[in-house]
Image: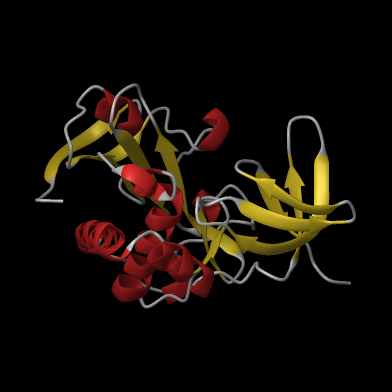
Length: 235
């Protein structure tokens, strides 16, 4: 990246939609509130105005970096949260950042026609417990006991994205995959992968160089490039 061009809005339908209308490498759309924010599979993502960091960034990832962009973004968001808020966080495949087992941030990568990818990030920064959809989610405010500066969090996240994109370009995508492995607690643990036509239970063994998840099930090792993953408790 050579720099970011940041556009700020009080209200938008979705930062993803605005970004898709402004496909220029490095453009960042930030909103205080989204009327129709979305996550993976079109699921709604909502937060009270001004309480969450909500932004979308337009990137032009080249070559193999495009395939592992969700992992790269997860590493960047996790590291930004750790450096800004001092919160211990870990990654869950394919696109969640967890703190103490609860979701604190989500990532969405969309690929419109052409060379660009639109990276959407939502971080539960200053949400109270009453603002959250359930006990499976948390916020930096809840984890730290004090508010987080959203501008500082945005700057840290963009800086981390810059750094990891540069590392991937110079050292290869293995540096991203290894960084993701170091920041997750799900490998070696039982998981359930929910697909439209079936559900697979097994042990999350690894992620591949292209960002796919390897799960050892009773029928052998299966490779997943998409799916909802639930971490299961060992009884």
